[in-house]
Amino acid sequence: MEVAPGETFIEEGETPEHFFNVTGGTVRLYKLLPDGRRQITGFARPGHFLGLAVGEANAFSAEALETVRVCRFSRSRLRAVLDDFPAFERRLLRSAANELVAAQEQMLLLGRKTARERVASFLLAQARPLRACDPPPGRFHLPMTRTDIADYLGLTIETVSRTMTRLRTEKLIALPSPAEVVVLDRGRLEALAGGFEEERI
Image 1 (cartoon, rainbow, N blue to C red):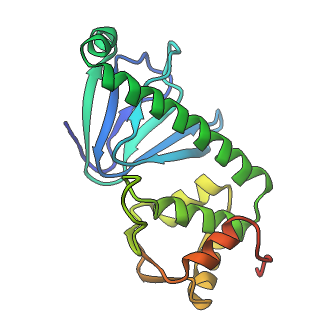
Image 2 (cartoon, rainbow, N blue to C red):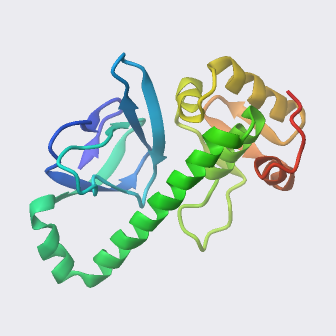
């Protein structure tokens, strides 16, 4: 099925009836605090599974950032699907393991990294190839807004914009447009994300 930009197809708190496999586009995952503030918890790209949580209610909302294509599966038929397609079960297990790793990385990102290190880590994550066998792309699409990035990284919009401008000035990246990034010096960007370069902001 196809999801239009801005359309929410998983609602936080609702009873989950389906799970989804993203096959195209980028999805914004977020939670709302009681006072209405939004915390973006991640971005799903092709290959990600959403809605697999075993709770009685969805733990997050999922909204299409651009036109998104997903395969929708009924949760009530999940056991039958896994019995019919054992390879699919292995994919789900890998997906669950990857989500755990991503959650641990996000804890480190928000808890210990500087603003500069957070932005560098985010850009490298977005530049990661969709298939492990593919080389990292030198140029990639960035469909999320600066506000989305700020909400995800726990920073202000001004800090995100200033940091990306500084990375461009230092020739670590180029920004042909607000929605496109070119990695010019991957080695330095990786060193920065790993905490091996001093904070310069």
